[in-house]
Length: 357
Image 1: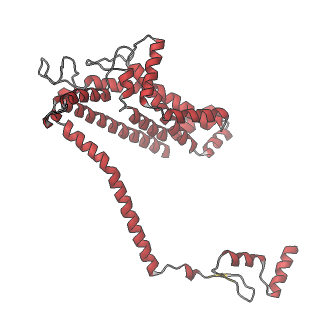
Image 2 (image 1 turned 120 degrees about the horizontal axis):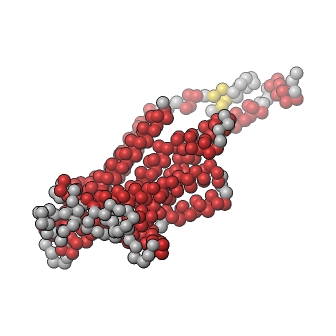
Image 3 (image 1 turned 60 degrees about the vertical axis):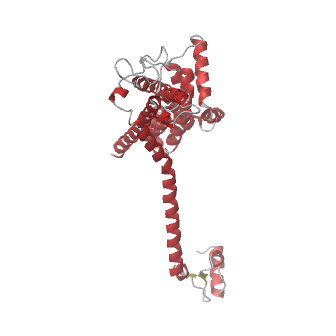
């Protein structure tokens, strides 16, 4: 049984007039032709067929865009290659086993020690690893839990908006301000003039937290809701769903974001100059005494070498032993950052393969 609309359409077709569907098709595209006999409209696909001139134009555009992309890649690669090359050229002469296994105890300027050595960076390597590890212990749990709250619990509440605003503000804090904050906090809690490795870890954690929160939040947000709903349908609690399903799914991205945060802070100098100070000997205790890191070591050696390269100095001053130590320490710092990035990629790949299996 036809309704009123069908009867109207049938009447229009019998009279040879266009139906409402024919009018919509004919007005939507100029390639639609409505025959006079009332048959269904016909689309002329030949008009969409590319011509030789249009194909040649497409190829030219493709070549131009490919050339621009390759050129942009090469331009972006120039700073990285130049930094690595300059560090290798200036640092390899001083980089040896003796340099890696000794500290600066007994070294005065560019003079050799009683044993004939010229000092090393063992104390700076230990300090860098300990201070960075302390910052990771502080910032990673706080950052990940904050991201979990924002994605899984807050759902756009006022508190979530306040936390997001605070994280954005923290991401723009100058690093030296973080060092001043850590120094002031320990001066208030422990005593005036307190400088140790833990203070430096607190300063670096303030710089790491925003990066960890943002990357973890993004990774948790892209976890498919189907996984959550499937777990809830099976009677799994929300806490267990988050810990066993959501976090495990987002783990590769969280690890990558954490590695980026570490690379962001491991080269910081200003906050550690204030919070951790400088010492020529090895201090393995993170909670007591001054502690030297590689960036601070580079700054100290460069400053002493720059004093030799004052106004009127000969160009040979740039090859001073202190400048060589600074370049060698900078090269070691670059290698550590590179290894951390490779480790992060390896961990992400391992977890991704396990997830695929």
